[in-house]
Length: 387
Image 1 (spheres, rainbow, N blue to C red):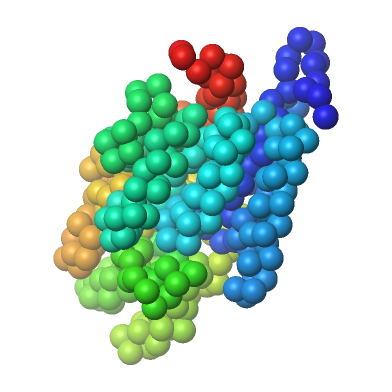
Image 2: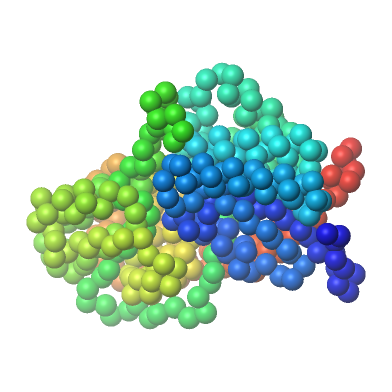
């Protein structure tokens, strides 16, 4: 299939490899936003490398992704390959795919999302580190989520200044946000994985233990339970996500907080937006992050956010301007931040308004423009490698 021209505008044909669109998580949110908002001149063929289901099912999913990659390259049906990856098994799977792309000398974009990649990489055997170094250092373009992540990847994999770019995660901006003054009972919302993500490599569970990812949900439950009675009466907490829901429910029962804290399973984008529209504040006390989509989505809804200064968060959140920063695992910090939101309406509204203003530049429409510019630069680089 040959490239198509429309009014002299070349169609960019992208083979995008990443988590299946049925997977719950931030990478899927980014992929879906890109696909749903792609203009006619951006032709994206998304292929899942991992999906919901058993290990045997996912072996077949991955084999199919390899077949699709080879078929697309051999038939010259893509101008470049865009691979989204995190850490753990995702890195291993995507490295195999990246190797194939490089063998066929095709333009390759690696898009890093991992929250614990730095710790993960440090625990790998030296030979695997060398293999990843060879792959990453040879990509055409590397996308990082923030300045801090760009600095890490640039140094770790010796990426040139023109080889690496920053694309902060995008958001859909609601056209109208609710009026939140005069509320007599405030709703705090947490979105994300509840409990820790496991610490063993997906495909070799007993070989090496890797860092666990923890969004601080259990810290949050305990902190909310220690609020003064007057503050608990004036508020409620909703945690929505996947993970250890039963363990969270058990902890809530032990703390006698069933009437104040609600656990919900993972929400569809529509249900998530309904929840954020009724919320008064967002909390994500993570120990590690890339750049959390849930935080950006909450900010787009004009919510004040209570978050931790990890990953790319400090590049988006300024303490007491568009959010409140607390230290990971510090229960006293969490309690004080929640009390500030409960007892100071002007602060709550001010933080929410500033949060909304902060993410307007991250609107998906702006992101697509930046992404197309990046794709065009990759094409130019592949045609003129010396540049």
